[in-house]
Image (cartoon, rainbow, N blue to C red; front, side, top):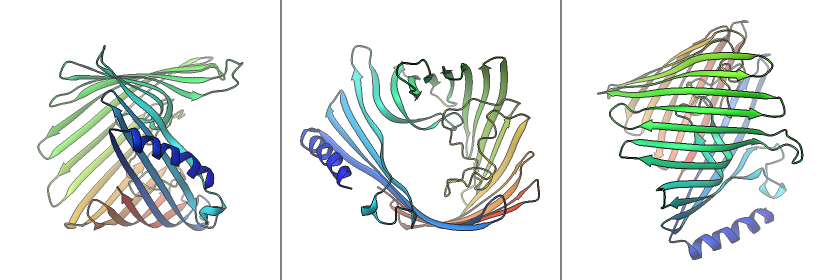
Length: 360
């Protein structure tokens, strides 16, 4: 803890004294869950995680961000008392500079980024990001992401290069291009991901398709796509999530694709047990498909019921449901949820959990 204070205190002094603007944001989540594993062995744990970020505007052309995560701390597992040592690491340390000459922003350092659906990446990375707008409707991003630094004197690094262009409008559309180069395993990949977003009154639809060329000893091709649809009828919100991937699927960097399930995926209130999910659209040996339907129903202003049912080919099916309650609007949220899954091998899994989250 002393080391953390010694690191954060100078940062606070620097940003507080010299910044034109200074903002603090963060999130704290406490979660308790009961569940069983793939062998149907029962278990449970309580954990908490705290994220905090500091944003400083030194100049109209220059801003700085630093963010840290304390956790995830599992109660009674070496992190029950902060003084005994906690899992503390910095997730973001970067500066954002506006280059007047080309009217573009460059972000250098550790930063956060995700593609539209989190299929390839939804995580922090070390590298450089350039944002440039062309005209009123075209926005572009270019990035170099350092996936792995091996020995500094050996050609064994992993680098990912990304380009993204989006056209704004009534139906925003765009394209992601990823090129990954892994010198350690002599593996390259080229991914193309066009997408479109549509809104038609109370209905909305996001669709992404992908083509992935995987170049190693042999060259393999993967194809697939994902669709997320919603229908908001005021008293009820219906959703549909479909993901399909051919053999070989898609090369990912650090994905966090949320299909709304807890046992066979990742849901809003639980990070996922990863019993059977494990990004099955990457390197899959056969056709993969998942279909998930969801519903949300406000009971009153601060309380909402939700649920989902999903089926994954060659894996299983899951039903989950829960309740959200805003204890303090836009600040403190409480949720309770449960899920039940039936695997194709007739293994039955469950999860029961509650979470409290502060966002500021």
